[in-house]
Length: 566
Image (tube, rainbow, N blue to C red; front, side, top):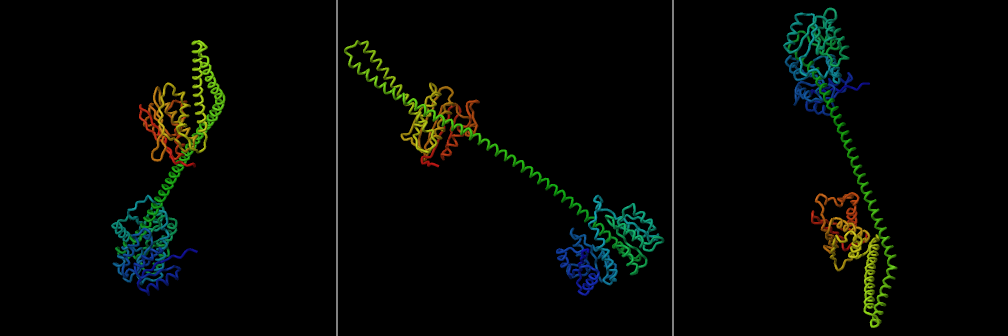
């Protein structure tokens, strides 16, 4: 079952409102009654009716002004409007129709005629959703077809409508009119009810069949010289939109035609606007979809780029860790090797030193006891032998000192947290690098009286080896390396200064980057300072580098004096 049509009745007369409400509800309509134009607008805001029946004379907003306001809003301009009034003069009808009403009915009109006009307006409103040719011009002359066998009235009416601005086509019979309609587009058909052959009622019924499938239905205005209730009923039931007697003033006929055409054009314009809105909505949705797709692609690209960066960073850290582990293994292996060599050297060295001292003592004793018994030549030979034994002992002492430093280095390679003598650590590193400095680099040491520091000995030893080795490599010919220890602001400071080539300003910011090196290929991994930076950072310290091209570089290693394990 179809939904009931709602009709809004705007009538300040309670009696007239109840009368209309009773008739319309008996016809199957749903009604809402209000007494003022203001209340009508509020009701329309709450729910759009299918038809508005409005009294011309209202308190506050008048009926004609209410019609204008309803037509001004795009959401309500398609609602058909019927104006009621007790003033039946032509001037009142003209004013009501010009205000925007789609039909004008006197309050004294027969109720059956009223209901027929209500049905006609609602029938026309069904076509609001019909598709209209979008390419049609919005501002155009109305095309009117007049079907009338009366030459005099037809010519007079055509002239009136031409003066009104319409494009008028005339035919004398219903058959000719239908043939013309089959191949031409018209906005309105004005047809005489009484004609020879096919009369106006038959034409109207044929047009009703054509209009049922038309995108923009024709407006049909029935003309008749016989104005009676029966003729009005027959015309409206046949499908006519309005009935006008031929005796009606031309001004009123033009007003009724304008009201019918205004509604037709209004519906077409509404459809154009809706088509344009739908087109804009589709464009907006398409643009939104394209934007979302672009954002999704950008997000995907950004995600891939971020994933690639993370992967590259992970790979870089992995390579750095691998090299660090290799370096640590090398240092550990070197420490074990040094400890083993020191142990193996120490045993025979002890015998050699003991024997050298014993022989030197014997030679001194023999020379003293036989000084008066042997010749000066033999005495000189004994003294020479004793001196050589003394020199041999001094050489062995240097070997023993070397073994001690080797053993110190091997102990520093241990990974545990402990307190060490920084001076001994530096001297052991210098010992290992002596072969690279002989007859080329002079080392100047300036140590504090107290150089003990709590740290991870093996890691710090690796840092000292990297920093001092870089200082040696920075000196191409002859130069000087100065190693100092000091304290400042609660930090133990180890300063290594070289007189080498210096570091370029553009490279200075990258020296701690993994795998960055300015050394020739095969002479550096680019991880020494990077590893050292990480080690000192784990000691809660820092490494400061100052360099001048052509003059040299100073590296300061700062470690807290109160560093605790962990």
